[in-house]
Length: 303
Image (cartoon, rainbow, N blue to C red):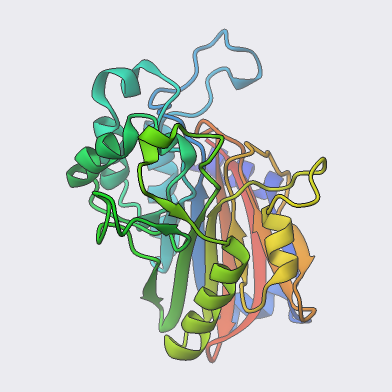
């Protein structure tokens, strides 16, 4: 992607999300900037869409995403690249290679961490496990109990990073597999209540790990207007404490700008999701002063 196009696309899709009364110019001059890049539901879309594929024509593709990520990292070394699941299924690449190519390319892009979506079980838990050696990044899921499966010890509940002196905690949540995935494909994987687990993870990351920024990497889905009981990212945000950002997946929701939700104690939470198929990359910039979050800016960048 050309730098001029990248800057234009970023500016066109940027929404200011004020978490405090400080201006952006002030934040940029004094604060430490942490950039979170994120994808979700890429579904094995390696190539860009063709020129005759409607509104998606000539969009997406791993090569363009790699150029975009490289540009952002050159601008800010304090950058994380995250994926919210459903890496697999959707093109012949998955049918032929079973996920090997997807994991190898994500490793080349230097993804930091990913969570697991329901379609990542489409070749069974054995198929997922067999591809793990090709992933040079960690998988996190706090509410999937893999203790009686091949995946035991290969998935962490959370991971922490330090960027620019700011400690960042990221934990993962997955959707209930029953009814979405054949039991034979996920075996003895146990689904745990995501709200309860999120509360526990937030407490651990805030009080024990002493994180300055807490991110939930979720494959629960953005919202379910027809269901009062199904847990979504919006419900999770309202029901929990301490989470600063929820990066979502599963529902293929194209948000023009991140959603701001008040949590259980009235604190603002950013909820974002960038559709599917690698057409967009989400970008959230956080500005910290003395390890205190002062400002955030959310973007959706077309690939």
